[in-house]
Amino acid sequence: MGERRVKIQGRHRTGARRQRRKRWLLVGAVLAVLVSAGVGYLGWNLGWTAAAEGDPAPPFVLPDQQGRQVALADYLGRKSVVLVFYMTYG
Image (cartoon, rainbow, N blue to C red; front, side, top):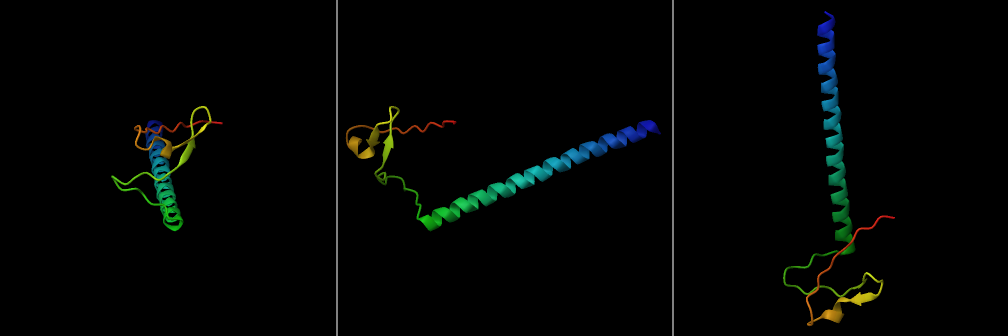
């Protein structure tokens, strides 16, 4: 009888772990939907639009690796432009 209780408890623990995992997956999915809906709502209200293929890029100025300001218009018709965005911590 002692062995049977251990097996039942083992199944119960596995079932509880599975339930907890399902609950966290559901919470994560709900959060992902809420975040994407919020970004969509803000984009709609702030007038964010995506450029279509073949449309010219909007003018902008960004700092380079040395901190100097570089405008996209500086390279218009001269060179191809590749943008690389680095993520930094701190």
